[in-house]
Length: 244
Image (tube, rainbow, N blue to C red; front, side):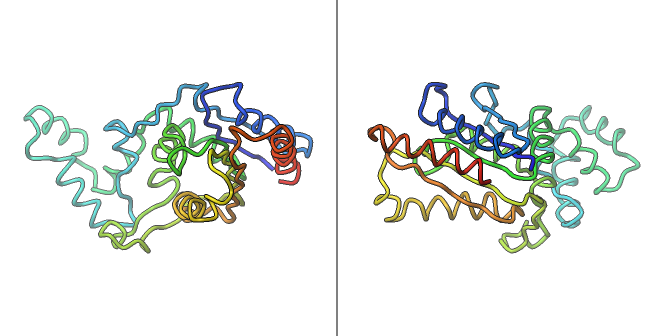
């Protein structure tokens, strides 16, 4: 199986990195085709900005929204004269859907490169610490910039108008695994923290866009854990990869 692991921790000597190493070793020993994206090592920019605009345009699943966006944003009446003339000349013979289709191909290069890696994989893995009951900002930003409209999901007209059931899944991966190292103990997560994370990350960010099965493994209170506990977590990380 082709497995893509997205890793997020700034310290290469961290326990989280040791988890990554053991999990990756387990994958390779089992014969999986493994690739790791170390977000800090590659300096991935997690900030979704105006340059990402084209990746969030509507598509032919919402033709009425396409027309509205083209009219109000592409052919904006408050734009300068030269810009309006250039826009008219560029798109003068194209329909609204042809215009947004062309614009959607102009997304940032770094995002396209990440999407190509995701598309080649059959399964996804995310390894990171838990910060503020969620992913580190660099990993959350990776999802925001990479899991875009037209790639991870689409929206019907109803979706654009606020109906959450109007989201159409596009990802085809068989499974995803999240390995989270935590500051707080198992009791804290069983009291509600894990449920909150699984709702937002497992269900909404991963399963909802089409990933068939999502598992979440927590390695609790690793900062002050004794050597036996840490070794047990590392052995578990290896087994998660070996039995993936």
